[in-house]
Image (tube, rainbow, N blue to C red):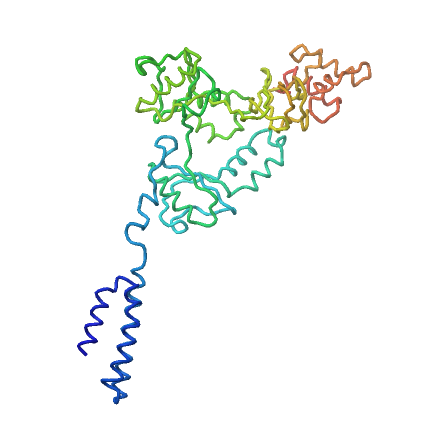
Amino acid sequence: MAVKSSIFSDIARDKEDLTVTLLTLPLLIIMEEHVMNNTIKKKPFVRFSFTLTLFVFITIFICSAVPLAAPNDETMPTKDDLFPTPPYERDFDPGYVLVGFKEAYKGSFSNEEFSGLDVVEIKDLKLSLYESLIKLPNADELSQDVLNNLKNKAGIDYIIRLSKGTNESVWEAISILELYPNVAYATPRFILKPDEDHYEQDYELGYVLVGFKEPYKGFFSNEEFPGLDVVETRDLKLSLYESFISLPYVDELNQDVLNNLKNRAGIDYIIKLAKNTKESVLEAIHILEQHPNVAYAIPNYILRPAEEDVFELLITSDVNGTVVGISGHYKAGETIELFAAPSAGYRLSHWDSSSGGEFADVNNASTTFVVPSNNVVITPYFYLVGDIDGDGVVTMADAMIIFDYISGKRTLTPDQLLAADVDGDGVVTMADFLIVFDYLSGKRPEL
């Protein structure tokens, strides 16, 4: 029995190595045969007990060795592996994450669904845009295919705000979200940050976009920003707010959107530099980034597809209406969305292109345009309702023109017929004459 104890103690000392344990098994079997044949050959009960004990010890050693074959501390993933140090420090918005789902998600990003995720606010991007568009006064004129597509994509793309506004919280949230099979992507909300080696003519020389952490009400003076030479500034959010509130149908706009723009005054600016050079842009960015209140400073980028034939598309309008559309460089055959918003008392007559291209509907305020293989200027034309003689005002002379047309005393051109159809029912009748007459006599405030 002393021999047997020595064998087991040797195995116990080497049990961290599975190979040693397995190589020892044949020796145990040989020993078992030797002991059985020479020591307890004639005692069946003792032989059975010895065999059972040997089997138990072999099982214990094998089971105890297997877990030790797992990776050691050097190969186990570390915290840095799971939450890597971000390759960028200031080029995304701390505390916010963009999340996309493979199938529509209707939850609330609760801790029960996403263990460890601490979310204080969520926004469905597609649904929010859809709800904003259908509240516009001209919603009926918008492309229904576009609206339906936005509505059908509800629950796919979100932006979430985390309880902690730090870079670390962003990466931790992303690592949590990416564990779930329905999550298609989870990324920071990036802020474009320039890299001197990656652009030459992709931005507008002499202009810089600047964002502040706290509202800034200064003038970008040389005293505040030594070395900065600015000749003009514009508060982007405030300018957009002031443009919206000047619209005739401002009361029908989403007040939350307007208030958000107003409250963001002093945060985002575009500044014009004294020198229109690449060097002045880079120098200004360097100066601005030294200021503790500056969140970002980037060139005013011009998006331009690389290595493809692109053409300049310019969208213009007059004082009688505004246009929602993006001038820029486009590939031939590309389709862009257009929306015309007439001023009070005006209607859209038609869209016009300077040189080719195709409108889906030239008479619809909400339409699309296919870019031709050349530079082009797009212009919407508006007309003053009731101004049949085209002198820019509605007078009794216009009312009499309508009356003479109804009486069969004169004919009207297509443009005049549009202006004379005051009630917009597609025909010129006595009802249109009475509307203009009542307007001129003060019985109705507007046409």
